[in-house]
Amino acid sequence: MAKNLHEGVLLDFYGELLTDKQKRALELYYNEDLSLAEIAEDMHVSRQGVRAFIKQGEAHLAEFEEKLGMFERFSSISRLSKEAKTIAKEFPESKEKLIKIIEEIEKHLQGR
Image (cartoon, rainbow, N blue to C red; front, top):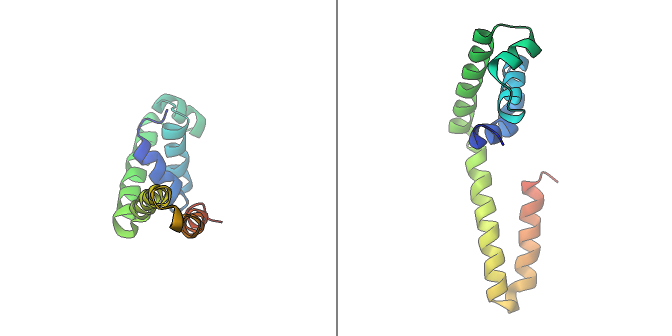
C-alpha cells in the first residue's frame, strides 16, 4: 500500500510535469514503497539527495493541484457519476438515458 494515497494519485495526474529524478524518486517512494536508502542506491545518489527530490516533487505536485485542480475535478465527476447511477436505479423510466450519460462520463474519466 502506498505511504500516502493522495500523493500517489497526484503523481499519476501530474508526474509527467516533474523532472525525471523527482518523478523516479516519488514513484519508488510511494508506489514501490522503497526506503530512502533503497532509492538512493537505485538512483546512485545520497539519501539526502533522494529526500530533496521527494520534497521538491511533493511541493510541485501540491502546486499543480492547487493551480489546475484535476484531481479535485476527477473526484467530483466520479462522485456525481455514482449519484446518477443511484438515481437511475430509483427511477426506472429514466434509467436508459441516465446510464448512457454515465457511460459517456466514465469514458472521459478513463481518457477514452
